Length: 113
Length: 111
Image (spheres, rainbow over the protein chains, first blue to last red):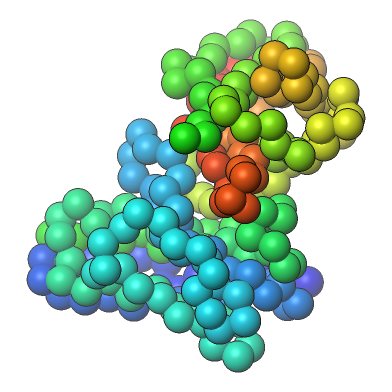
């Protein structure tokens, strides 16, 4: 089976802009989660989607949003970018439960100038 | 709140020796713990899952133990190799069905 894919792999934006990141989960996986990782920081959970519904949410401002489509593909959007949003954004999929084994994509490296 | 603590200091080990990483959890007894490996700039990769009723789990040169009394899991790599150098993360589900992640321990295997 193909693994989790994320596009784009690298992105450079300026403050105030918005960005959309895409994630395609492993075929058959219905849960998709998003994480932010900055240098020296652990994985910071953003949100989890299951069957097109946000099922779990981390402690991030409303500028961070997401959605899931009927084919389980997911997108994450960040509006009004700030310098502190520069990070590696990781998408992970799991079969059903959020707490099942997570299969991560390669990540999208976002740089905000 | 429920937390996972991993040694934030990098662990330097001589090639061929056994590397042991620690994961301590508080305030909740998880049904299972997961261990992942992360290389720089890449997503974590699942390694092993150990359930609360399993004292030990092995996979090739990897061994994980789970001590519910000490609220601790140990991750061992035997006959370590430079290619084992990476950051290792542990995670468990909490009482609210959230996945709690440790910050990870950076392992450096020196030739």
